[in-house]
View 1 (cartoon, rainbow, N blue to C red):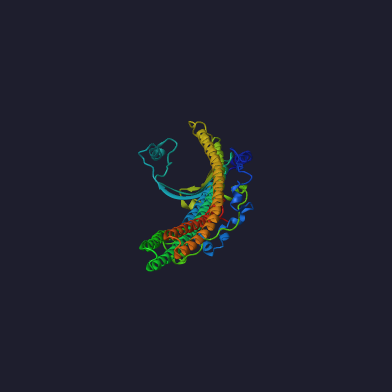
View 2 (spheres, rainbow, N blue to C red):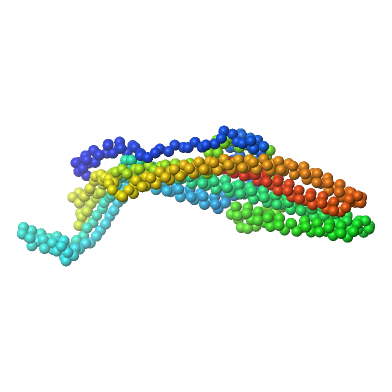
Length: 486
């Protein structure tokens, strides 16, 4: 490069460097979520505390069920949705690297060896073939065909004067954060589904045990009715009704067997296993994992920190804000510094001679003048996208508050229902025992005994549903709070 060219290039660098320090477009400011100071009155009725909810991140441990903890641990490692979400994070990081590469100069090298011949039927080729016929050019000739060898390089660097590249990188980083939050949301949902399916399985097994107990009770009643019938103390109707009651209880068992199979298959799918792969592990009945007496849920202000969907909405708002800067920067000039150089020669032996060198260097300016409103339309579009992202953030926060509120209400209602049903079942057992004694003594009809047995069975099934709902509600509350991640 000649000294004048070098001086011109160096002369342009200081003002360009000063301009490159600015970035047009709005700077992102994290929004403040609009949340109440405390939860509603249903929170105290649900048996929760406002202690920091970090301890509830591994909510499954609060149920003290080793099998549930094992299933959750395996789902975290094997679930296909979670693994796919991790790939989306890797994809976003690759996009960030692509966007960041524009911040650096581009340098390429080239080498070529060509044999060329110009057609003498073209003006250029005809001129070259006849150049020796012109006065004063006797004996001068231009070889045709000719060879050309070249070794060279090409370097260019777009000076980020108005922050277009920096805003692109900022948007790509925000997109990466959104992908990470989305991955967390998938994990929260997946682990919640594992908990729900497991609790539902144990609830179905508990209801099956109730029906098996009812079958035994009905058989006992049938035996009692048979004894009274043999003694001439009752009719055949009592015996038939007792046998019908036993068959009715048996008829409900296949429905629960189907539910148990579906729950086991659901868990197998969440663990990326074949259908029935967990049958041997889960077929044996076990109690519904009991909900802890209290659960730390933190304050409403903690939601923005814990809920991954809120974090993802904030990241997307950040990305949309940064892309406004990209659109605004496109309204301004672009300056690219370029350098080309190398060696060219007709002979390979003289390719690296100093006389074979060539170069070109200098800045290139691109100034938008007229595009029919395309760039300004892009600015307006980016602004609309940012407004949409801001509304989406507000909607996500509001949805989260409602989800937590509904989960708290469900917890409070089902806990109260569970306690009342437990007391009811205890009274139903007493009523059945008393009616059996009265029937055996001839003081009551068999219908009274059957009514007491049917009522006990129905309320036992309802109690099993309520107990299942209490644990399921708590899992739903943890999920609504954004638990299940670390």
